[in-house]
Image (cartoon, rainbow, N blue to C red; front, top):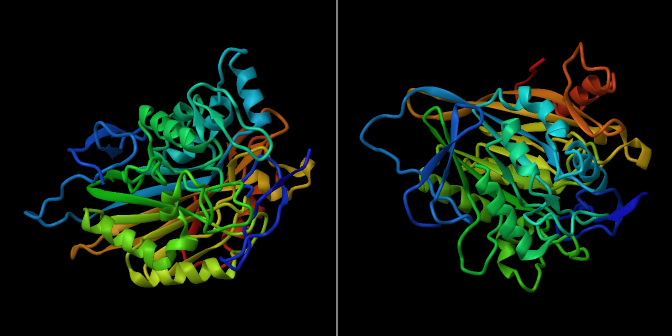
Length: 413
């Protein structure tokens, strides 16, 4: 059942030919924002009314000094569904509709620990539940969104090589479905009207957080191009880091700060699939961004295995968080690490002088049991559920710490 997928390799100007994969990453509006309550109970996502394609930050006050305090932000690995997971969700719903709750809800104790939680959504969503994902094409039932919300997430990144799998229609529907479920979406715009698709805005503990999102490609069928876009969507280039480069990302981050962001996080879809170390060009890109001082944290995904982290200046960077929910596993020839993932929680502290610093990163391994219903589990150091591979915690902990402890890493449990 192996299938061909597109996987990026260094340098940035080149993309590999097809490599093995299964249902994987083949690899400013106007108006006053209205908050929606967070499932964690401590954060709120800020959206502009009347528009499902853009968000605006809340107005900032200059009449009083910023309070001293802290906020925690959680990020997780790739979430994507394909034939097996979709079929299981249909079975779990009793044949009527789709129920993804049994697959993902096991991660709620981890996700809900943070004030703001951000996922990596590597699939479009469809309102009609037609033309669903198959092979290297991703397209998921709309019932996935409320489960992402119920698990505790406040929003997701949507820049990846599957963004355009269902065309512009899929992009529009995905944003609308996420918005209807109280979820933010950071990613490309989905029409030619110039309305931006990012940043996504969150608010918690007196902090305003902006999320930006970029990918090496947004078109799974771009035939190796990291700079090309579909003819119908040339505006997608704004979210290709191979096109805009470090300076473009830095400019977007500075614009977010000018609009009121205290913290800027950048979701990056980069790296080489199934490789346990980051690519040299991604490290170089992170170095440039970190040295600018404009970004607080880079959240990396796409390799489908956990990679290490760095601290560049005051910025944390996680190169790869593995899979949070996927159909990959050893029975299809993938490394066992594709069933591993990791949730990381970064603490940001504001000093009395207003300086905001990423002070600590805690991590928690996760595991997908794809042989018994694609159930995702939190993996503690001891006492893990019997369905979890007993080597998962040690294996994942070794990978996340492989670049040393510059991120001030410590396990949650």
